[in-house]
Image 1 (tube, rainbow, N blue to C red):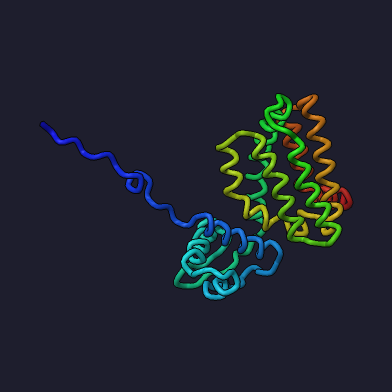
Image 2 (image 1 turned 60 degrees about the vertical axis):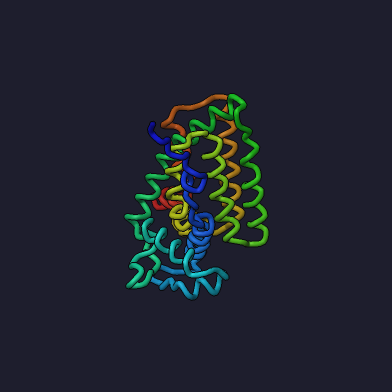
Amino acid sequence: MAVKSPAPTATEAFPQPKRLLLTDSIADSIAEAISTRHLMPGDRVVETTLAERLGVSRVPIREALRVLHAQGILTGGSHKGYRVADFGPETTQQVLEVRLSLETFLLRDAIANWKSGAEDISALQAPLEMMKRAAKVGDVRASLLADLEFHRAICQASHNALTSALWEAIARHVLIIFNFERYRDKNLSAVARQHKDFLTFIEGQINKPASMESLHDALEDHMLLIERSRRRHVG
């Protein structure tokens, strides 16, 4: 009679995970430092310096740097050392195009869920209020993060897991690009107003949903508001 193999233990079935949450948190901190220009394109990013500043060991720092390198936010490598990548026009355009495509689908699905009552559009109010508070005290970092959270709330309301995951994959790139003068108003109060106007547009879509093309155009206007305004003045 064959001996039945014992069932795998919990440890065998679910190998001990790495400290990914800490790694992600460190990667986010580095991306925020780049977005607020505390780290500039070409600057060296040193493990030991980060470990001292963040109060963590070099292991999760090293993992975070590898993640950012794989995402193209850092250049170089572990032996050569890492440097902040230069987000040139071509890279920036690619990120914006991907983001626009993803958010068009996410906004469509979020509107359907708000309309059905499966989600509450009031979730967009919290990041909007964060933007207003950041504007009052001139906190660029808080405004950038609130901006990202506004669009993340749309992702979450969409219940579109795959597209949301793809959006999250470029979230750090988006955070960095947010602070480019070409794509974001220096006036933080204007940023809050732009998002309030976009929220008003979204609320109108719940009652009378528009075509995908209309959503795409509205998102493009919202994302490239500064650039569009300049084009009109030049024209």
